[in-house]
Length: 292
Image 1 (cartoon, rainbow, N blue to C red):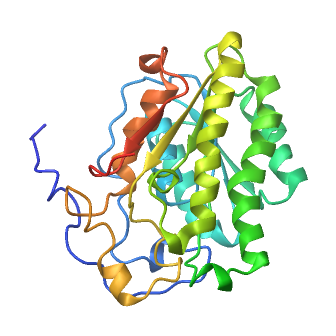
Image 2 (image 1 turned 135 degrees about the horizontal axis):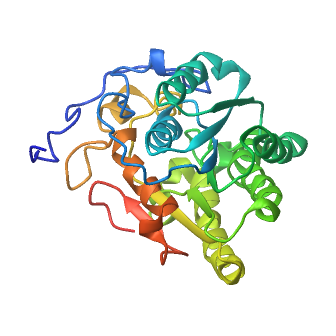
Image 3 (image 1 turned 180 degrees about the vertical axis):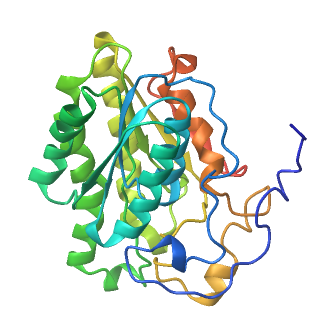
């Protein structure tokens, strides 16, 4: 494979002004994110494993679903019903890789749903080996005095409550060698004031990962996180930033650009595979050089 300059490997210019309602959709995101549809090549590193991915329809979740399927895993994805078009594309890519794809539409802010997706995955895939707790919500905040309780509650119920409910339901099904992987963020360590509630949840996720790695390690279950930096996904134009903030998105990384979802897939594969068998309690940064 030809070595590429990481500064120029993907879109390295400013992003044009665009707005979406939550949740953002792939077809309305310009340029369209790269999830590895054409680039990811598997090598059997997850052969025969069963994975559940929340927020698996687009963005980082889709990139992970593609990689896992091409590495030999069957994959269930969780997504909001209004994201069905994106989910259909992801499910098709899983099937094209020759793996079983399971669709689980619903909202993980609902405890019964966030719990039931585990039983549904176990029933349809015959077990569960990898849980990727990836679903997230963020919104631009114009000062703490303007932070609505309803918005704060949505962020916490999506990023923390749903994550905890799903993890709690999954652990009894996990055998030695299984993995829990959380999508944290550089925001856990370097919080932006306009994302204060989102950053708070990401810091809490890091504490969750470290505590659960200690609790579940003696049972042979590894718990880790990936901490993305600025990654171009449909969530970004749906965050509510103005044209100037969007244009600058990712330009402040040492590599000078935002990342693409495809550039995170390898981190999730590593953490789920035998290559990561002695890695637990870790937060793996994929940030373009931003430090944690």
